[in-house]
Image 1 (tube, rainbow, N blue to C red):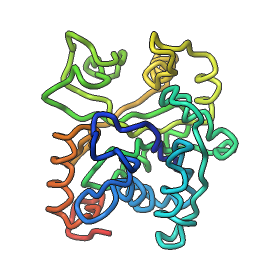
Image 2: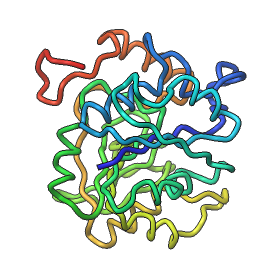
Image 3: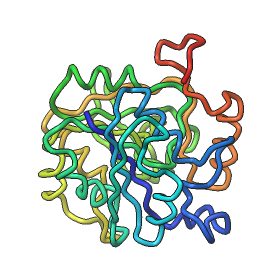
Amino acid sequence: MKGIILAGGKGTRLFPLTKNTNKHLLPVGKEPMIYNPIKQLIASDIRDIMIITSRENMGDVVNVLGSGEEFGCDFTFKVQEKPRGIANALSLAENFAAGHLITVILGDNIVTRSIRPYIDKFKKQKIGAKVLLKEVLNPHHFGIAILDEKKLISIEEKPTLPRSNYAVTGIYMYDNNVFDIIRSIPTSPKGEYEITSANNVYIDKGKLTYDILDGEWTDAGTIESYRIANDMLYKINNQIIDGDYDEYSI
């Protein structure tokens, strides 16, 4: 399996903190924000990782991360020329994926417990896709999962009247068909290719599974959630709590 971290965007909701830097390089706890998704992938035994970011931020990202030697992994870097949505950014990784299963993490997602148990389940699933859900207090800010007793029925992007409190976190797992699916989806009214549209195609095909994410999670994309992310990682000294949820951490 290969890993992909999406670290583009202008970070406007975190301005002025992002006036002179990519938001994924802002400190969270004692490390840059992007370290958390990197460490999540490495803890899941994923060592081949692509970082996708914007042209204006690529130099800073490469300077901070280097080749991956410091982390015990290999980094590949790719530029998203224009901010055309998460699915568009992911499409740039098609050659890198080279037919492998992939785990995709948005670079501002902060998670305290290892996601390895869910990745291991997806490796056994082998086909289709998997998303990780988390119950939230403000569901109208997220893509929201509509569930019945046994399966995920659909995902609604930032609904005005949410039909559940389960947000789709920015952690996704896909087979290689995701790139064909992205080519088939229309753009949103904002002219972007939404990852929710791709996920709904998998749902329609009956090939998307889900798990409820354990531990603490936040999308550190706003001033308030950025403060929460700092509190979360300060408490655990920026470590990742092992997937068996014992005292071992990395």
